[in-house]
Length: 230
Ligand SMILES: [Zn+2]
Image 1: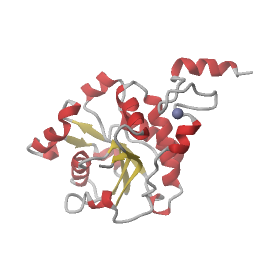
Image 2: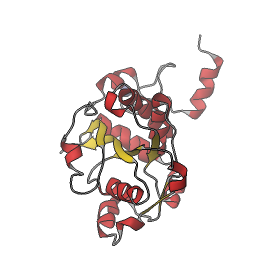
Image 3: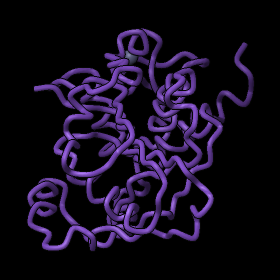
Image 4: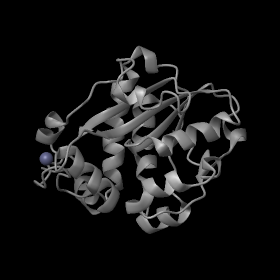
């Protein structure tokens, strides 16, 4: 017999799989076990000088970069990211963040991280969506990595529509003005992990890194939930 509280969780979390839409069993959260097994994990966190690290060469100084899932057009990761960003499923970010964090926690080169910073949305955008998907991912990662999240360490100053995001950032005259860093919050931290949902051109991350490094000598690491493959 199901525990009485299981019925309560139905009120808060969607009871269908975000990947394939089957009804979930009581023990499953957001993703069914079949989709969990099929997640296209990149396992790039122990490699060095891979494609994603090279993306930042000559642009900004990052210690290491990783992404958890490969994202192909209309594939499983694409459906999960869409659900996380546009179908009001913030809990999915926590579930995926826990899995990603568990992978990094067991990796020697990621053990020295002492602060998690999600890439912020503009406050108006966050109000419209109801949550920041990168913060949801960071919450899940914080649970399994046992590292604090600094939700307000970075603040976003420009508001863009999703479709024009890339061109707007490229056109932004002074990239230092896109984000503001609250250095007092992270004065005693030496290894900051910036968390984003999807890494494509790297322009957003580059702006974050340069903003932080103007104020801090901390080493900066990058983790994105998904990376598109073309
Ligand atoms: Zn599924």
